[in-house]
Image (cartoon, rainbow, N blue to C red; front, side, top):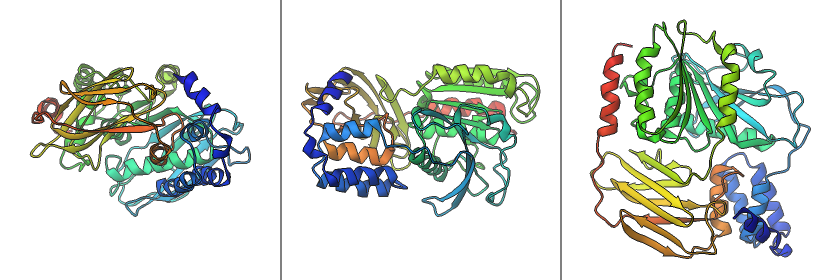
Length: 431
């Protein structure tokens, strides 16, 4: 399949890559945000950009310069929620634009701080721990009004990743999320709510039950089944006064039962990370063993809000059935054949990539045992650019999409997964 895609791209007519298309691609790669990438996409389409030519250019990615900042870089950004978010990132001093770098994002603890962090303040101790790492290390900030488990932080982390990718050659399939204490709890939240950009999750001395407390104010419900297929490395202290390992273990077991790939380490000691250096080789091995798979053959997603949390990679839940609290879609793919099971969902959408399907052959989608669609779907530059604007991700590109209306009567969403986690949380009451 990949050989066919490249052959078609190489055979694409040269005249499609005219000045307007080239200008649009340059503007798309230089844009600060999704809105800017959408505007640039209009130039590419007006210039007659043909699908396979544009696909090949996007897949190759933007050109990177060697004259960029290295070492510790301090910046800030304004989120869609109007808040100013400070962040810093570390770039290897010997950065080589010809090489793709993994990215590790680290969420700090202590998010109950009343005011945002200011430039120059040290919200992550021991930056030297990461100085020699062959990666780009990112340190965002959170505080009481914008903790890690809010929608604004999902948008913030995505915006920071977009900014890093704009200037630095990032390996999009090796972007990892780490967190300590409140940051560890935040890692669980992003795994539950917004897994698409992440290859694996590292939750240290946190506790997912915090997300279930009304006092925490987490945006959205928590669905353990959303961890199916996710890779997590979880560490807790045996004598941690806040989140002892024995209380977290029950949650880990429940997530494994839902299909998560989890390493769980109970460390001697309390609420600290003194074990980190000794665990470095194991963490490195876990990252090496768990790149992101952008087009898995099986995928599922449950959401209580298609507006806030609709998507897992190539699956988008667009509308719930009336009267349900949440809805779920599970899809398996065998070549061009898709078999979906839904619960509480009225409409969903499949995103189709040339890396996963053969657009020269018919595509068949079955939903709840009934054929929803069967026939050819032509890839289009418009769809390709739409999702490229959303994702800014050369390793995950979609040439077409297939919206599906669920015709069979949807079953009401069951509260089982929420009940499972509530029963576990009883063991941690008072934490």
